[in-house]
Length: 146
Image 1 (tube, rainbow, N blue to C red):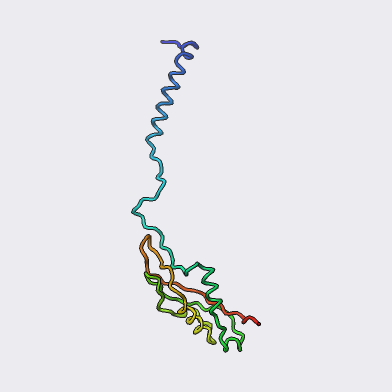
Image 2 (image 1 turned 180 degrees about the vertical axis):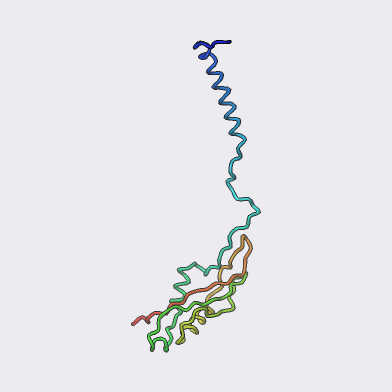
């Protein structure tokens, strides 16, 4: 039987630590690192169509062109009309339809405003333009008193 003394341990300890560090270091190299980027074959999320200038510009456009209908004014009608429409691959608008009516001329006015809007930036599926259904809210409140 071989007996190790403190002198033997002190002499072989640095070599033992060096060998163990090398083995541990090699073992870590075998673990694959996670990729930083998504694979190219995964499709991106669709991007919805956009009014030129964004949401704030759309709200200003609606406010600028809104005419509070006479019947709605006489009956103190307030509320929101939701208008659906189609934005094609070129940004042209079509197939206008009232999704949530309010009545008293407000529905007709909401469609008039929607048809007056300029061409939109089309929806995208990755890098390809894509036709999409979209809707806007036209809010009717008490007319401003001047």
